Length: 365
Image (cartoon, rainbow, N blue to C red; front, side, top):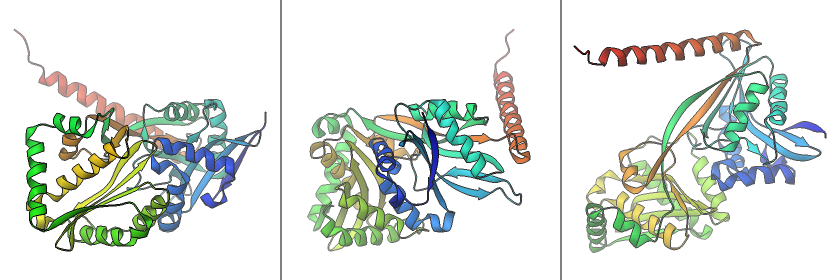
């Protein structure tokens, strides 16, 4: 058995076995495939640092890959390796073949130490703590000599094992059903309309409508304005795009970008013009896209991605949490100090929580 490590700077450089390894991950999230990374590299990473894809091959077949960025740790010469992503990224994971062992993956991690020496730490996020890839990664970090710590990233609301749309709607409660019906009726009476755009031929008009609504919404301007339009275009070519727009007298007042792939619907971006909140356009549009995902796309899961916003609980059935891993290389000064500080801080916080709980406990007698 021969193990070798290769490095690529762009997904277009991937040979077929490496591309397949990444694309197998798209079953779990569109953010894990080569299409997502290609768009990220071309629209974001030029300003965030160089993207690197380190790949482990066993007998000329890719069995592990990790997408990262490398930074200098503050004013020191030490380096940090971080997951390739930013606030757009709602899921991260190493791309692993089912047959890989933690010992084999550790070979790739040791190679990272050598390539980016002196490497002080790794920081990878956000990840599914229940996934096999996460557990294998934790074990591999230990085998490779890293001191690892887990940390919480965010809550994730999702809907699983749904039934048909009428049954789902009946389960939401009478108040929600009444609000959807009332708001849609008012919208239509006032010459409003609801449009679903999935055809690449209609893409430019749909993106322009989304951008117009986004500019009029409460949200901050996008720091990487090419990222979303080009991602939407790439996913539209794969028939993954569901772009919903509410129009009122020719003006877009709400827009949502959903991605539907491999039986999953991801609610990626939502925005509405607060000047028209009397129409509850966000509620009406979510209902229409949810109905389409269930009745036409037949998805088995709808994912609200990141955040514990109160409105998400209304639409979804379950909540899970995303975690990250920070791993220190104690063979470097910065890594050793980081590990000591991390350990000390966590134990101090745990002691404080225990002491506070004890102080709050009512005394008997």
